[in-house]
Image (cartoon, rainbow, N blue to C red):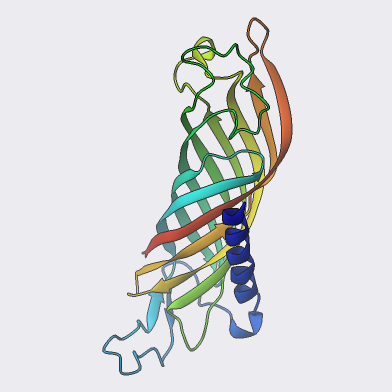
Length: 244
């Protein structure tokens, strides 16, 4: 839980930083536009920050972690995202992610695996799934630092993941739970630092909030579905973005 508290603290600090609208002004026009401003020199450091940042389209790679605070989410996350500028600071985005983990019934917050403990069952195994999401982003424009782009984001996401043993079918499972899916809202935010007019790096934090639906297949019984509340956190400190 200390790890979760650390990430929750980081999320709070990031949201406080992004909640300073007095630093932001309206961004430039959309559709292949360019953000322009003077005063972006490197202050004698030998490096000059770009005086303009491309608008219009962006693709990004985001990784590596997510956690289920209430409810289970596979820990490893690798996402690709496309952003399209609608007008000025207003952008739409859509993305897909591969999620995976090595986990067992303890990670899924189950009391036991639900099967007769014997060789080859009730152990950890691979968890693999996909997450698809889309939504709206507001990207702030800082007049004196156009290369620094904080933003706030809201998404709707759907995720599906199969539990151990992956690809083995219900008859070759490690515990009664065989797969799960979730529908959730993802408020979040982050920041980009553009080293060049078309390329930047940064970090994102998102908070999936919704519900999980599990498929459980008891030993000798019929499949059954159950649900629970989901609260998670996506911690993505390794983000690369390319604009065009």
